[in-house]
Length: 469
Image 1 (cartoon, helix red, strand yellow):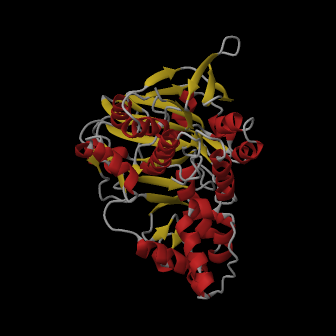
Image 2: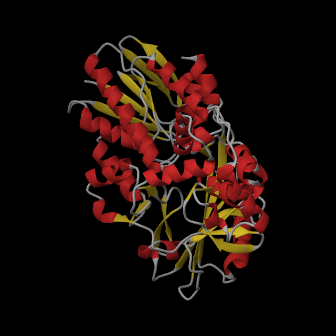
Image 3: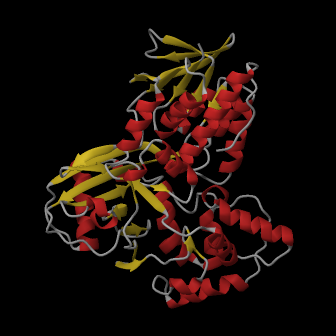
């Protein structure tokens, strides 16, 4: 009987296990080993009597992977989209509407930034399209190139808050190619063709290529709906609460060492699929491939916490979906979501709000107890929305090392990992460390990895090649 071990039970590992079940012959055995909680960063709790997500709450619907999987699992009737209200930006003590027509804050039309920038900042941004950009390819820090081209205000007031919301990282460290691949590709294409190139023009081209319709989706009942469906349909054995200590090459496959060091257990597998965070990926790969281990070690992680609050139904929130704040703003939270405004299925009962706290390099922000985190977020909420009522329910969910940092050179690091793993027969990798931190991107890497495990099993000769999610 074919046996595949999936290491990691988050959305990537669960998707991989499910897809393997659909691809491999019926008698195949699939084991998922998860050290903590099945579902990973998809976590639904009860808040004020409602199902509420305190991890990833949404996914891109303009990427096909998540919607396709949700539909395949029979969950399309649960798919919901945000209400028409827009998010806001906190700028120097005031809240402005997030301008439309940007690529993670890089404007396709600087005129749309009139309500966000000062007069001088707006003039600088408007001039960008007419300034020659000597684009030589390679990778650069987002903050560096945006500040040089548009001025510091675009970075501080737009790009940094948006990137912080996705990665909990700094625009000055995150790389353009990994965080804004469409923008980098447009710059490459213009340079190859000898056309004038600018960030404004590249952003406009990216947005022209985008489709209409909703950008994001979620599931009524919470992301646990997806977690439960994948777990049920995977037909896998789940070993929860056990660390994977090491991988060992064995005749015809692998030995997976799990459990406590004094008395480890060994699982024998034809193939192993790793869907783990960067630190665990480094630890497991380094003895097998020093180059892959070094590349994985170069992917840093950020910690954060979600503070979820429920207020009495009579509380009135601003008419927006939430507020993003850059690091320069005197707030504790980098993002506050007015969930009862953002999602129609959460309206009409207790007023629900969630705040994200913590940025890469700012460990002190999380080195307080839960009650202090709640107090700080309540202070932010009073400043942002005028809400001073006492919550009827509050939950803090901490995500230690939860977000990979796509620093300059990330694409090359991932290329190295995948090329090295391709030379280890019966081994595959997936997850947020690779080609995107969002749910849809993780699903994509998991399905690609599962297909290549299937090809390895069918071939029987250990050749699975390199792949991309």
